[in-house]
Length: 97
Image 1 (cartoon, rainbow, N blue to C red):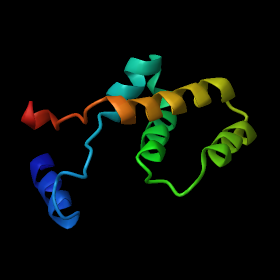
Image 2 (tube, rainbow, N blue to C red):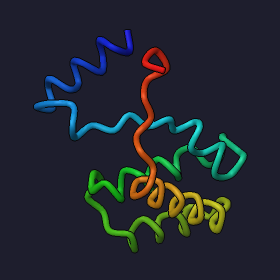
Image 3 (cartoon, rainbow, N blue to C red):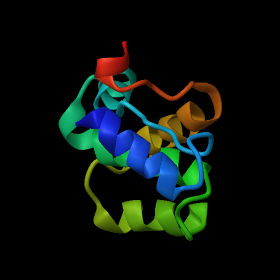
């Protein structure tokens, strides 16, 4: 199933070179040790850094502040996700390992 989905996404995106398959669960757990509160922040940071979210950093940081829940942790996890987008190679689907 994953291979078929990955191939379909690659075809529709004009090839596989511009696609990142990221282990978001592994990323959040490795970075912060707590999946529940960190998965969304880390993946948001990753996608922002890749230029896939049409919002500026200041707007996102302000939204985190306005949310008022674990603000510093959310900002830190968001920035770790941004760093991961710049440094970590994309993960491969489990069947390809």
